[in-house]
Image (cartoon, rainbow, N blue to C red; front, side):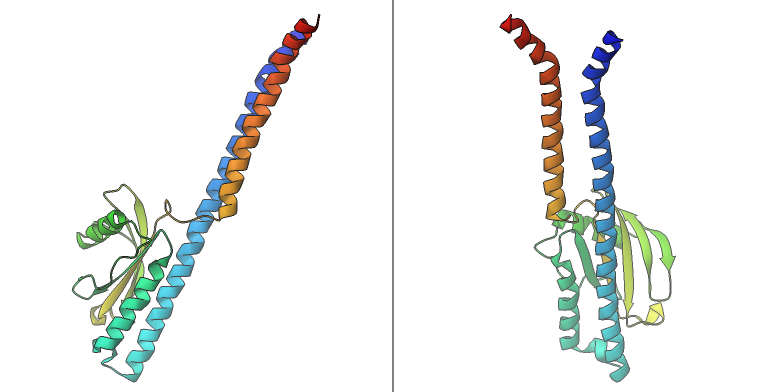
Amino acid sequence: MKKFLNIFLKFFPILLMGIILLISSYIFSLNKKQTYERVRSIKESQVQIIASQVDLGTSLNPNYTQDSDNIKLLKKSVESINEQAGVYCYLFDKDCNLMSGFSKTQKHITGEALIKELKDNNIEVLLSEEYHGYILTKTETRERFTVYWQGLPSGNRDSCDFFIILAVSENEVQENEAINSCKTMIGLLTIGLSISLYANLFMKPYYNESDK
């Protein structure tokens, strides 16, 4: 029994550390996924707001999307969506020419790779409606993107003058700073726990020997 207890006490810290790391890893992974989905939902809502504004403008003026000032405003609106890291949103005309620019928060390699795959039509259609839908693409950077597209103005796809393309990188999306602090603390506590337990197991007998 004593031998079994000694073996158990030696391996218990490793087992405990492994359980803590596995549970925390699962929780953090789940949190990252939820953060990614939340960012995607918010950014898609912003795209839909822009589309609604263009639809309203077009209903008041049939030449709304031909006016240079309106096009500049549309470009600025699309580029403002890119202010958050990991978000890639671009404006294309109906001939697939890129109208908007890159933002400082974007990785240009990722953005350029995404645009290349879209232009090369290396895509898998997930959902396609008349003027919006979802497609899946994999870039040269080996990252898979679920891309939301929205035609402007809303209506028949062939009648759309512009298209907004939106993708969010799950790898780059920013998590809450508190989560990163928790990761560090759990790592330090796990290391401290292991050192403490093994010190009690191996160092205490050593000091007992020295006291004799």
